[in-house]
Image (cartoon, rainbow, N blue to C red):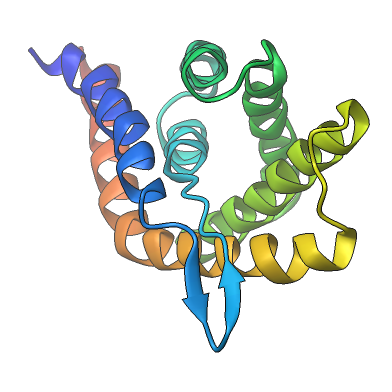
Length: 172
């Protein structure tokens, strides 16, 4: 039963993104702000930080493929970006001391990179009609703030649960 909890949590987080996306865009002081939930990449990053890097690559590939199938019309964008961002974050964590604050900051940086890469790809193929200043003001800053609130709420439970799973796995 325990081995199904991790994929089940991943699926719940995957679908919760679409639920929270229905609240976007919002109107703040006369400006339209897009709140893009990136809960799945946070889950995948914490999975790589506190459970298993190799398993997180598999989850990143599978959930990236599902993300491409369900949310985008272009195959391979998220399927490539999710494992790539996990790889970058694990390289960074090899260089610096790891704790929950550093892990949370790295997750925010990876969310910013994900948003930037997706924006650049959409510009490349001609889907995005938003300028760089509009992207920063309407999408990136609000997305980072929204996901920072999620990380603030979920970081410690993710860390504690995934660390406990890893300890149980090593004991078995």
